[in-house]
Length: 167
Image (cartoon, rainbow, N blue to C red; front, side):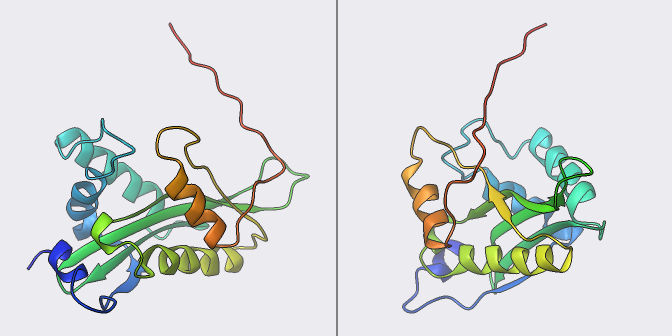
């Protein structure tokens, strides 16, 4: 039974949130490839290498870095990763959610909220008092923005500027 089938049963699916294991990388990479907001992502070796690198950075018990997965009996249905940062020696530590994704068929069942809350509990233990998450502001941004608002998040005191770089 696939995780997509399991999430479509009546009532909320039974899931748990736990730290990612190296054995989760392939499932996370496959799940990430279904992200409609990231059409260039792939399950090729490039995608697997990228997730192996993320696991090294966030999933190996390094202080202030966390990589979590949500699983059902059928496998991985969501993932989240983030870290606690400081801008400089004068700023208070803050948490940054780098990625949070739930299988489209499992959305609305509390999986994303559980992943976010589990990250926040870890961030709080790491000394952070605020959490930030960047979401796209074009092309289907309504869903992630609504999710952030549902979590009690609001726009912060910083505006992101961006410039492309060329050689």
